[in-house]
Image 1 (cartoon, helix red, strand yellow):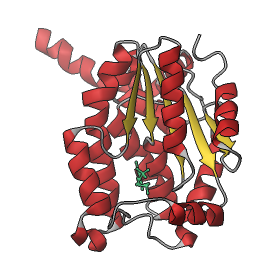
Image 2 (tube, protein in one colour):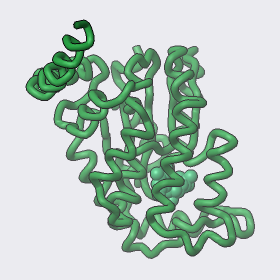
Image 3 (spheres, protein in one colour):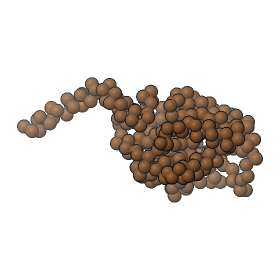
Image 4 (cartoon, rainbow, N blue to C red):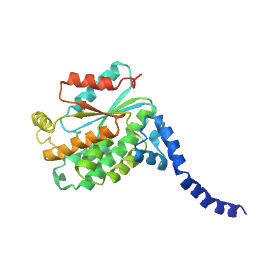
Length: 268
Ligand code: TMP
């Protein structure tokens, strides 16, 4: 008898979920608002419905920095870290790919290993994703749960832009992979340091590097970085609440001031 009832209920429950997709979507959108999530980001909302998001209970603040090579990201990350410490905040800085033992090994394969020139875009995508999956679970999740401010030098927007736009991999697949990897985490604020490609290239050449310290991606032709820049512009237009485009051409002090202005209210 009990078994009969359960058998009857299964398809009914299934069709209830199917029929109520719009309601579920709405409830998810309301929940996401509490985490400053834009409702227009369909993929993100779907990922919330389909996964047991570890990031949905985050207590800290998550800030990411993005941009093309030599745009001054690392300098601004350090400056923000100092400021946060001066304010007495617990701040944790991470850098992608890397910041875990596994991530550092993956970084070596992706960027510096002598034999990596044959790497195909699909392998590249999956290695960046693997490094990030480890970083989220090993460092970012516990840090945010403890209430810390996490500052990340690159996060999934790099994959959206470098692999999904400049490498021309299927953007929908890249978006789904990103959400699978970060399992609900989404930056509260993302700063894209925006710089003309030629200026960036001149800065890159001037940079002091150890012998053989260049990497596989920064050696790509300038055209690749034009796609990267356009990808970031499109992202900022699509998610204006989260993604802030910062002109990286002025002095480091001026760039820092512009970033600080955009953090208004978030650090209270
Ligand atoms: P960086 O440490 O100097 O920022 O170098 C990381 C390089 O890897 C940079 O060229 C951007 C690239 N990258 C991707 O292509 N996709 C990604 O998802 C990430 C995190 C970085």
